Image 1 (cartoon, rainbow, N blue to C red):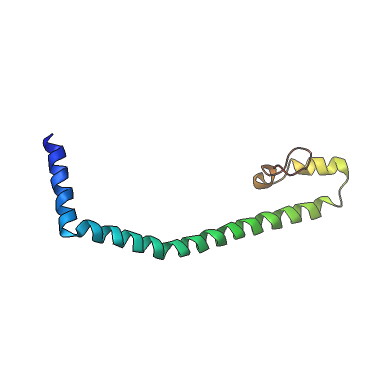
Image 2: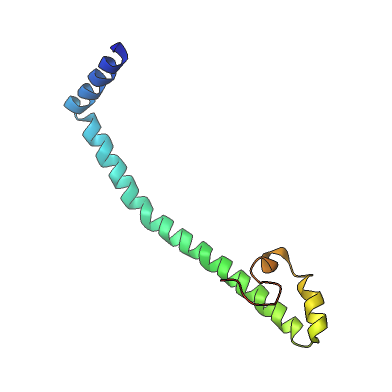
Length: 95
């Protein structure tokens, strides 16, 4: 019970001196200032990953276009792991 009383006393002191309110306001301001940066950074990174995947896929299809069906199947098993995880064994995109 002594620990709970000490915690309550500290919380009451922080509240009565205004430190708790100032700390809460500071946290809100930081969140509001950092949020747009994080949204932009995440969007740019997702677009870069999507562009890399699209380029790799188009390149692979361009290479496979001139091959016969049996050669395409052989080449499929030589795909980079990032592409193999996105395509099934029949060459169809996974949903």
